Length: 433
Ligand code: HOZ
Picture (cartoon, rainbow, N blue to C red):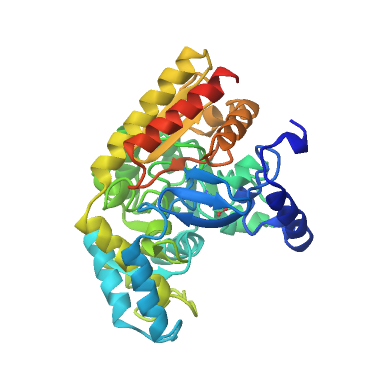
């Protein structure tokens, strides 16, 4: 496709031209730049329920959900009301509030591994802090991460990273010094022997293992139970800390996240996205004996001017309350399975090599006919075919994540009719692929 053939309105094209003069690549986060699919990003004017509206007046069924937070769709009235009430009292105090304890209660009640929690501003801060706490607690330096997993732009974790880092060809970013990453051991996801070998080679040296318990950042890649159980038993017997990065999966795959769904309980958990109800908020927590090492209870430093911000806390708290009062999880699973079956039938009918992986409201159509259980598998998929699929769907009013290596997310407001409309659109696009 030439630039003018992409189905993007003139206002978005002009807005991107302007933005490119002002911000690197025209964006404030690389995943948004459409680098993997070519063309111009759509500039968004507003969102409502399951829809996004661009500045040219086009409406799209939204399968990004702000990359995860919008599990209840856009602008849930109770969340907007909570935000408005909080704003009326002030936007930041730099002092404790009762609202923070309320959200802390909600998180601790929800997430099996969390006995104590610290609120921060983003998923990146949460993982960065959790790694420091794990190292400070164990007195060890090494950490294990998995290729294609993405834990935000933390130096020590920006090695073989997924998400935009993989999409845009910078899985090991310039600017990460050898010193920052020399203690990071990178293994393949779902590789039990790799984990056992690492512990055999470095007994008593590994502070923590961090992973996405279902990967969303190389497309949707679920773990095997054997993998999760191996991680739990190896970390336990060596005295290192198991960290589930549930920034994507927390409150999404179940109210208690992937750990509730799989029944494997880590020592620490990182949260972001849904926990902030669409505002910037992250959290990390875990066993009380570990969390009590954080300053001022303990000696491990971590702080933040806007941590526990009252507006973000209000949005997160209202979101979690809605998830308890009216759990969407059965609906999300049913719609996820319906979408997976519909896409499977369409891709098969049109002879498109594919693999669909879905769990709850996370799903990826991989353009390759092999199972995808680790980064090596994901990397073999046909990115160009994905790009054609993405733009074909945009033309039909369906907004998928703009990379083969990002899971889609949908919300409780994605009805059966919208899922079926999406399947019809995909059927037409796959027919011409
Ligand atoms: N970290 C997000 C994707 N895995 C992207 C965030 C954004 O670009 O908005």
